[in-house]
Structures are given as C-alpha cells and as structure tokens.
Length: 242
Image 1: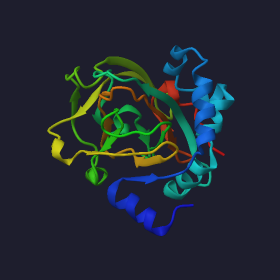
Image 2: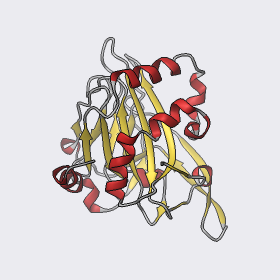
Image 3: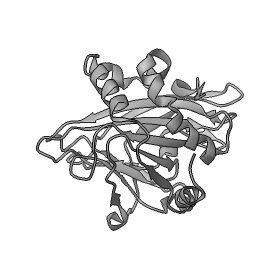
C-alpha cells in the first residue's frame, strides 16, 4: 500500500518511483525466461493473456495494490503489456517524449502505467525520463518525431471502435510534444526491481542506450479503471488485474 505522502507525491508530480516491488529472483526468473523466447513475440501487446510468466508480473500484488489506490478502483483492468530491452550502442532506440493517452485514447481517461525496471536503469543506458508536473496541463499538441538519431520514428493506422460499435481508422505516429522545453526533462535512476507509476498525461520517454556494456530492461503495463472504454480496437479486450 502507498502511504499518504506517496499519494501526494504522485498527484503533485504525475509519477512515483517505488523501490523493491519485485525481488531480484523474480526479475531474474522473468529475464532468463524471456532470453529463451522468440524476441518477435514482444511486438504483441497481449502476452499477459497468453503466458503465465507475463501474467505473474502484470498482476503482481506489488504493482496492482498501488494501481487500485491511485485509480480508486477495486477492479483495475489491464490494457497491454510490453517487455523492452535496449542494448548498448543502440542510439536510435529511444521513445520520443509523449503522453500515453495519445497512443491509447480512452473514455473516461483513467489510463495509467507501471514501468518496472528489470535491470538498473538511468540516463546513460536509456532509462525512463519524465517531465514532473506535466500531467496538470491536459493533453499537449504533438507532431511526428523526426529525430531518428535518438528516437524510433514510425507511422501506422489503427482501427477504432466506440461504445456503440461505430468503427473508423485513425493514423498514429511516434508522437512528440510540440515546443517541449528539454530543460524540464528529468532522467530517472530506477534500480532493478523498482517501479515507476505515472498517469496518462505525464510526459515521458527515453533515449538510446549510450552505455558501453549495460542492457536496459523494462516491463511496462498499462491499466484503466473498470468501466473505461479503450477506443483502439486491438487492445479493447481488457482483462482484470485481480
């Protein structure tokens, strides 16, 4: 359970780092298991439904407990999961700074995430960076990322569906915030087994791994409160986190 002070920090900053959520053994068991699997499988967003190793992390009580408190929901739902490895000397493998609701529009907007460090992470090896307080200003305007030296650049269409069944297609791209003051970006140092909880409006992202020999590993799970409608058809089949 999060303390009142931790809840206050989350509300003030839009994110909260919580140490020692996973034990070293829990992290190592997952990382070693994934090393035996086809890396292409990580492109899927529903491995938490198909693989008990992914389910164990996504539904870990040390993650779901704080999610329930922050969302004030007895039954948070899992939208998607990702396992992200960033190897040394991969300068273009960062994720442009963005807000998650641009990628996962939802109504009402209850989306939030837990980013679990599955290795020691920091600015040098491409760890998570955030803009404290950015969640208080709503959704920012965006443009397609163009800095391929630091970030992945892509564009695709997704099928969308509302509660009535109406369907359409929207174009998505590697979102980047218009006019972002880079001096406001903070590189987080998140040790192995710690998690970062953040809201869907908190600006965050990462840069490439510039370390000589340290792999950056992270496991990200996105949640919504029960009753929230996710508009992207490919991730509408949300499942209970408990």
